[in-house]
Length: 364
Image (tube, rainbow, N blue to C red):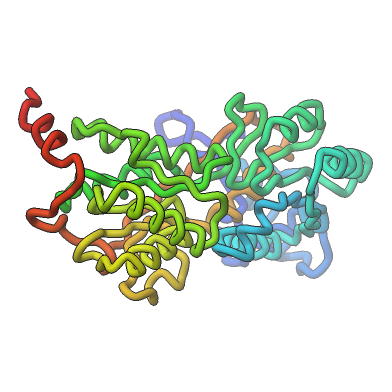
């Protein structure tokens, strides 16, 4: 149900937080009262119910005490160990689930047989209200889940056909903002360091391309450096090989994740190059340790905890009387400027630079 504004125009949907704030109680207390769960005084329960009715809040089917299955891929577990992105997403999800009285059951998924078994279990368990798929967005999973009759939300995932709702950072705009920052510092030859394989990372690649092309610069294939995994040492090796094979024909590196940015700085150091004096380095994630590297890492802040919390909210929104169509939520990201980025070095002898600058000078 949608509440009406003063002039009869629809306003935003009333959320559980609005009911709790009106009553001066916590979200978990409001949730328990609306679910008729134990632990709420009768008079307070009556007040909360009346407030929900007055605000036209659509009460979902009993939320407190229900279960949500979190299916996490092996890739997500690698993230947990190697760059901590998953850890902070799960932390935000756990905090939100606790406030709502929802039980989250984690299941690790390694193959399609385990995916099919999970969906069968979730379908058979009346206590399970839906599933969260963490970094599970490949075509085999989405095909298996196509006839699932409970809500599914992709967490840090992307369904190009919009069969399922999803919550991600706005990866494309974040990478574009990061590249724009380097361009504003005078950098024109900007490497993009990435690990391919997921659509969310491809969106970051597209954002890097968007910024270069908007400035009349070529996003050429020789500026893309691929690594086989997110380990910093692999990124360091890739940068070392890039310099050994083609020289230092760039003045900046944008990495698709902080762990790769740290590796890039390691590779530059081993090649005798300074950061940011010779090469600027920028990451994406803004993990807590980014501020403590030497030099401190400039990066794009990704709202990881908020992504986890919003994914659960999005799933629970579908438990009301009006089932919403699948939708995609993308969180804005912001630049955190530290000491790993600086002006492009004046008069740097960049390979291919003469041709590149000639092309720029001939632009209309």
